[in-house]
Length: 312
Image (tube, rainbow, N blue to C red; front, side, top):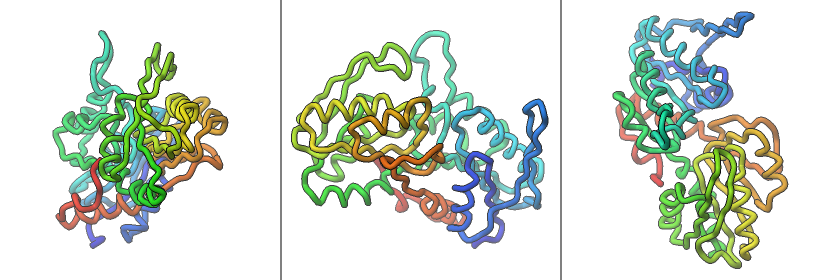
């Protein structure tokens, strides 16, 4: 099965890529990066990729060097005569820029898609895009995986108490939370927030009765944790028994760790699409390597991947 397949990693996702390769059953490919004193860098493959299906694992969270390193790796594989080049992007950065929400701004997600295709990518595998329509920005196949595949196992255990209620921290997450609520056959609550500017909430209100309930907040990403912690504290003020949060991508920038530690969140469950910057007793990480490895196996053997994940 491993004949003709090689898995490589960018520096941002080397640990995850190593575990994906191990789960697949092959060693992680050898990539070296030459750093110049002015900040320029040059990645190179230290083994042949001619005629191979090359899978490049790299999340594209900030800094932008992570995205550019992925583009350089794609270009290098193309120029080294790889048969197919598949970008495995567990966290797809700039996905929040999926539309013009005000005049004179870029559509960053579309620009990233254009750059990946220009570099020579043949396929993209990613997880929990901030906006699912980003798949349509590509003229190559996109396999969009869902962290719900992993989260549902945890949620079914928690649901044995019969006291859960699903919640979204904002209106944008209502569809996602409603999908979870339907599968688990539980109630739904929402938070409505108003922002004056990015990463700053001016006000938030709760829609739904959470009194005496174990609230499960679900979102695709946690950046500064302002929305999440404000929502959790508000639910507790409204009489919730506990609040747990499930977020796919742990960006956790700025004051995120301090906010989580000081909030009333019982536990934050995330995946390892982005490596944590530091440890927190309130944060638990669920691995995604087996899921990505299974998807790669199915693609290589031309099998359907729809049975490998639960859509939410």
